[in-house]
Image (tube, rainbow, N blue to C red; front, side):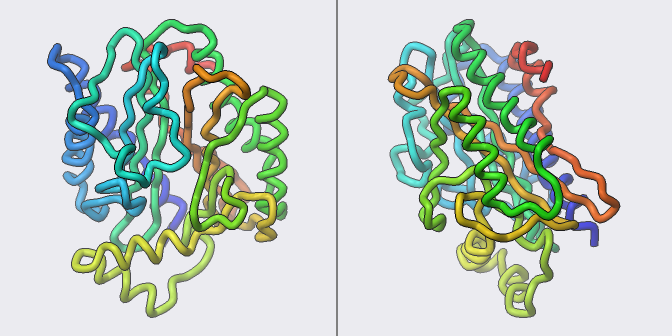
Length: 292
């Protein structure tokens, strides 16, 4: 079983389904609500029988985050965690096709291996140069962290690297997890990408269709966080997410923007950064994001 290949394929299911969904919805002139986009994306992902029907990051329902804001009002993106009900997708919040900001996240899980393929990105339909620059800089930080990461370093070293880059660009990081003792982090390991499942974990995963809560809780608790105290060292094979959610420091009207990359460290010594953003950037008219 090539676990890193499964991670890549699982993420591609999410990104490919989002591309198809957005292409269809954006062609229509009908209003697009958060719930409408969530349900259409979920339906498209569920066509693939290699993943569980819902994502592991639950709540929000189905393991999907969809949040719409505008460059005139970023309140909908002022969240530390998407777990509370007020930040679940709503049927009465609609996409602004001229000034809209959209945060999108899903958390598909491969049925056989339990490997997750999280996908997150921010789309912007407006022209504000400050926001465009924030988006480019946030994504650039992920590329830079990847370039500076190598096998053998601790997860805390990756966190230190990322924290310095955020500070240099006058960003604050807003990634919060109740399971992270430091409360904020820059990502986490992909469970089972670098370790084998125990017999009990295999049983829990196999029972996922009947007891999904037990299965996704197991996956969630297996993560090791990219925080300032984690001493786990990178090895191969291993997959680690890098997902800074940034706001510009001391700027009240700065939206929270987020991109989610997955770093793959392969046994042959090759490293790969999974993004899967470019087709979707083009679809949203964000060609300025295509150059690193």
